Length: 486
Figure 1 (cartoon, one colour):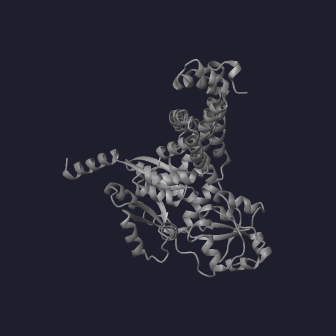
Figure 2: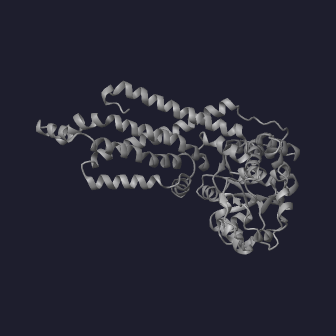
C-alpha cells in the first residue's frame, strides 16, 4: 500500500476521533447554518456535539472564547456593532481585533443578511410607508423589536437617533413578531433580509434611506487554535450560499414546516458535499426522555446543593438576629437577578453547559429554603424553649430535639417550593447550552412551532406535578399529622 494511502487512512482515523462542538444562536437561520455545519462534520468523521439556540450573541461569543465551543455562524456587522462595539472597523481591523481575542472569522459563507425594518404590505399602503424616515411622521405606530435589537449598538437607540423616531417600542421574541404583525397587534418590527417569513406574511422592508445598517456578511467563527482537520472541513462551505438560496432554506423551515435536519441534509446533498440526503434525527419519544433526564439532573443537583448549604447555614445563624437578617437579604437579592442575566454573567467564570445552569438554580433555591427555615424557627413557642432550657438541654440538644422536629414541616415546604421553582427556571438553561426541557421550547419559539413548545412545556408541567406529589408523600410518611403544613 502506498504511503499516500497510509497517510490518508491515518488522517481519516484521526478525524474520526476528533470532537467538535457546533453552536447557534436562537433564530432560524443560525439553526440551519449550524446544523449544516454539524452534519458536514459528521459526514467527515467528526463526533459532533450541538449547542443550538444559545441566548444571544455575547453568550455564543464568550463560549467560543472560553473554549466551550468550536464554531458557530456569525455576521460581520454583529461583531463590529454589538460585540466589539467598534462600528468603524474595516475588515482588516476586524480580523486583527478577533485575533487579539484568539478568534478568527474563518469561512465566508457568501451572503449578506442585514437587519431591516419590516411592515406588512397592508400597513405600508395604508400609511404610505416606503422608507424608515417615514416612521418619524407617524408617532402612533406600534413598534416592537427583538430584545437584542433593542439594546445593541446597531439597534434601536442608534436607529432612533439617526432617524429622529418618536415611538417607544416594546421587546418581543423575534419569532413571535411576525405573527403579531400579521394579526395587527403591532405595526413595525425588525427583520433579517433573508428571513423566510418575509414572503409568508407578505412583509415589506422599508428602505434604509439614511444608510444606517452596516453589512452583515455571514461566516463561521472559530478559534485560532482550532484543528487543521476541522478547518479543512469548514472550508468546504466557503461561498456555498447566496441571499437567494439562504432565504429559500429559511422558507422551507419557517413556511413549509420542514425539519431543520432534513433541510440541512438536502442542502449538503444538492451541493455535492454528502452522498445522500438522509438524516438520522432522534424520535420525539427519545428526545423527551433525554431532555427530561437532563432536566432532572440539573434540578436535583441544584436542589441538593441548596439544601446542604441553606439549611445548616440558617440553623447556625438563626440565633443571631442580624446575621439571619443579612442572610435573608442576600438570598432575596439573588432572587431579583434575571435568570438569563445571571447565566450570562456566569459564562466568563465557569463556561457554557450544565455547570452555570446548576450554579444559577442553586442560587435561586436558597431563598425559599432559608426563608421557610427562619420562619419555622422564629415561630416556635418561646415557652417550649424555656421548658427545654429548664430541663438542662444544651443549645445543640434544644435544636436537635425540639426546634428542628417542630420546624421540619415548614422547612420541607420550603424545599418543595425551591424544587418547583427550579423545574420552571431550568427551562432557561438551554440558552447556555445545558439542554433539558427548555431546548424544545426555545427551538419551538424560534421556529414558531407549537408542537415543539409543547414537547418541552408539557413534560416540565408534569414533572412539577410529580414533584409536588412526591413531597406530599414524604410529608405523610415522615411528619406526624398534627405537625404537617396545611
